Figure 1 (cartoon, helix red, strand yellow):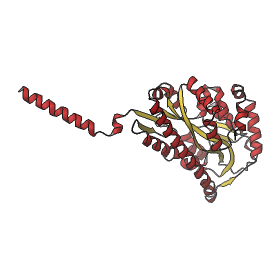
Figure 2 (cartoon, rainbow, N blue to C red):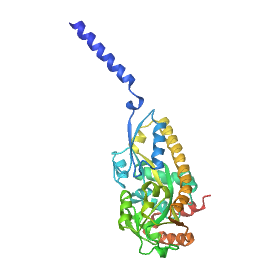
Figure 3 (cartoon, rainbow, N blue to C red):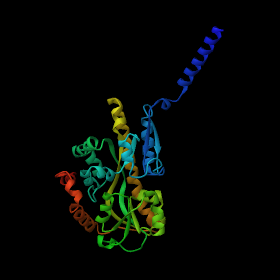
Figure 4 (cartoon, rainbow, N blue to C red):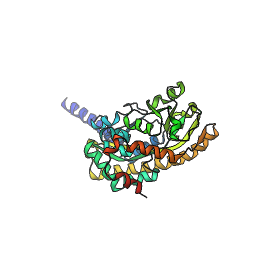
Length: 328
């Protein structure tokens, strides 16, 4: 009897061992949940799939897109409370907790995607990232460029200078940094969630929105707009971020591989966005939208005056603005 029991136990143990050995590698790895506001049609969704593939030997990455896990603007707190491992965080959300970062959300600061990348790879960028790690308690892997923000309007009113946007209800995300950006353009900023923007344009709750052209296409905003004004007022980027508990649990070798995978995916995404922007400007024209460039110098001058007169500017690191502007 005992012989049969022992033999049966051995067989069961062997089967369990075989099942464990046959399990896919990712099943035995820690799971990292990633939350973002963008949809699965966004280039950044493919960026994250590339990143996930490159680190699958160490981690399984689960993507929660279109604000399905946390609503827009709450992801940062989720990271800080260890309720989320990775997130796509707007610099405006960082600025809410760390006023010095409001500089990095200001209009006409970065000239283009290359200027943005150079800043974050520089000593100045390292200083600002360390400030976030020390005070906000999250780790920034890098800036995820998603296009240059342009103004899209439903009304057919011609826009050439900021005064032409007076009284125009321009959809902006919630948060004072975003409202300041809207005011710096001369518009009346109106907070509306990203996922609700199409309906807000359709019903007239807002007159327009500001987003990079790839976002306009992804969310089909062009269906409820008559024109795109190429103000190029903000080089749009978010921050690929990991919570500190997750980061500090990694060995130095794993941290290096994790960062390298992020750098590779971000570089690919940036190149794809730049290519897409060039295609879409012409594509929207062919589709019947009016697409034109206003007086950029007038918009830049107005925006800079609004920012420098704001309370935000008092928190900017001394000399940082001039140093960023001087970067080649």
